[in-house]
Every structure is written in structure tokens, then in C-alpha cells.
Amino acid sequence: MRDILPALIAAIPIGLLYGALAAGKGLSVVETALMSALVFAGGAQFAAVELWHPPPPLLVLAFSTLLINARHVLMGASLARKTANYSGVQRLIAFFFLADEIWALSERRAAAAPLTFAYALGMSSIFWLNWVATSTLGAFAGSLIGDPRRLGADFAFTALFIGLIAGFWKGRSTAITIAASAVAAASAYRVLGPPWHVGLGALAGIAAAYAAGDAEAGP
Image (spheres, rainbow, N blue to C red):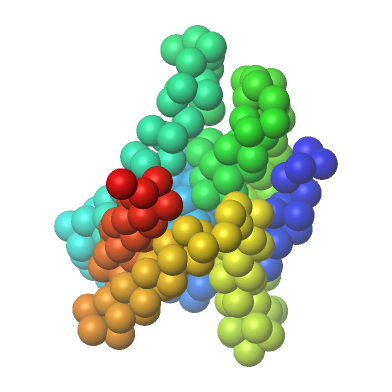
């Protein structure tokens, strides 16, 4: 709980923003709460709300969610060995709660100590509860908040990830990876629009990290 606290605080305005946007698109408080509880993927939920209109474009929503959440395959693969001591049920529970913040803090923990199921559950369950509660509150009070963007609350999502990236800084290779991913994602967003920028930014970052690793290893 101590380790997840900064991300927990940063996620509050993000949850409120999502709830307000969902309510503005016509989702009820119950529907908003259920989406947060069952999907638990902020980026995919924001994309779904952005694309939402009656009747819902189900195929577009499904494809966008799949593309944005494809990064979970990479995050899960990186944690596979670190969760090898989990039982099958424990793994299902742990990976259900997997989010970018949970992954980043799990990797940081695994670098210093064994990543136990108790640690992972204690960290992720409180983060999940916080997301469900704040998004539900945002949906309930959406009409009172108005447009959250005018308060700058939409930048909280970006600020949170800047903080997570800073925690993994390892010098030149990190800078190259971040720069390649940022340029590719920003370019794709401008040219193709969402959700393509997520996948293309990730692929560019992976390629740059691989190339930087080879360059540092030398011949």
C-alpha cells in the first residue's frame, strides 16, 4: 500500500475524469462502475467512451480495446518468471488486476525482492478499489464537475506515466527507447488517430530498445 500510494493518488483525478466523460456519453452510474470493475483498463475505457455513440459500434470498440490492451501480453510475459511460484488461481487473480502502474511497481519490487502473491494482491486490490470508486463518483457527480479538461485533470494520466518512466531510467538506452516511442506515437496520433498510436508507439519502443541493447553489447 505504501508503494502504490503515489499512483493511487494520481489515479484519483483520472478516475473522476473517466466517470464524468462516461456519464456525458449517456452511461449510467451502474454501467460506469461495472465497466471499471470488470474491464479495469483505463486507456481502453477512455478509448471506448471516446468512440461511444448510440448505437454502439461494437466491432470498432472491440478492435480498439484489443489493440490498446495488446501491451498486456508484453507486460504479462515480463512478469512470467517472477510469478512462477504462484498457483494457477493466484496467477489468474494477479493478471486480472494487471495495469501499467501495477506492472511497473511489480518489476521494481522484483528487482529488489521476491514478488510474492501477498504483495501483488495487497498492491493491486487497493488500486482496483480506488479506480472503481473514483470512476463511480465521477459518473455520479459528472454534472457538478462539468468539463474536467478545463481544470487540467486530463493531464494527470500523462503525469502519472512520466513518473513511472522516470523510475526505470537507465541512461542512454532508456532515452533512445522513450524518444523513439514518443515520436512514433505522436506521429501516428496525428496521421492515423487513436487507437493506432498505442500499438505503433509500443512497437517503435521495442525496436529501439532492442537496437540500443545490441549497440551497448558491442560486437
